Length: 378
Image 1 (cartoon, rainbow, N blue to C red):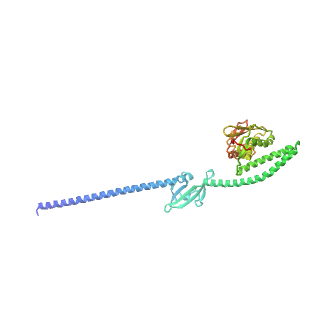
Image 2 (tube, rainbow, N blue to C red):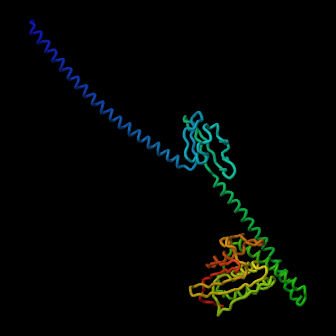
Image 3 (cartoon, helix red, strand yellow):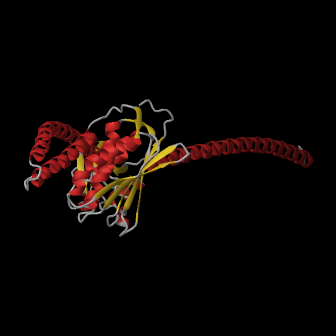
């Protein structure tokens, strides 16, 4: 074979090798392109999985942060892995411990007190294992719940005490009525005698005790209002007559303005007289050196009738004006502070209002405002 033939054969072999190499390169390029697409798809899937994982982590973290109870996660060695904001509010920021063994309370007790003094917190402790992670500590602040329990227990005791007081007051009121009757009879028999004043003193003292018992019974018992048409002027006249002997003992005078015809309201006459009596007694006690108590009326045309009870005493301190109708509040050394709160209660039950105006040194004026009734069946 000549040299030319060998050269042609070599070129032919080189051409075949080149074609084979080109085809191999094209095949490799196709495989690389396929692998790149697969890698890109895997990366997209991985990115989506990471985004979903991050979303789940944020979602769970937001839930843990939003829980009002303190949550602390410990690893298997007892070190803190995670804790929420409630734990920092409850225990302090930073937390006063780093390991479950350093907790300032015994997690086996269930219910513990965290802190001391005014800042003490009652808490319910739950400690549980969470697999290979470690353990979970949940601390629930139950201070408010404990306070409600104490308040409920106090209310229960007060209710029981109220029932007992009501029974005792009822038992005492009956013999007091007999004492007052006998004192009045004795006063009549002692007309013209120096001892008459002593009998009158017994009578007025008993009346004061009976009024106190009536207020206690009104405050502790559920009442059923008996609503009937009433003449307010007539009720005031009866109340003025009963208060005059008491007022006279300290030199006070009880006056009542005249009215033209009945002033018709609707309600329970005994309760309304009790309210008037309480206001009158309040006025008498406000004037230990004597003064004037005046009952006045305002029969306006706006659908209401107003009874004004005014005294000439020293007036009500400005700082006490907002509290005088609260139960057990009193500006006097004596008294249980129920009189004016009973008045407010009675007026509310009669769809009325009680208002007060006072100027220091010029006395006080209480206004009892009743809805008017047009027809009076006397």
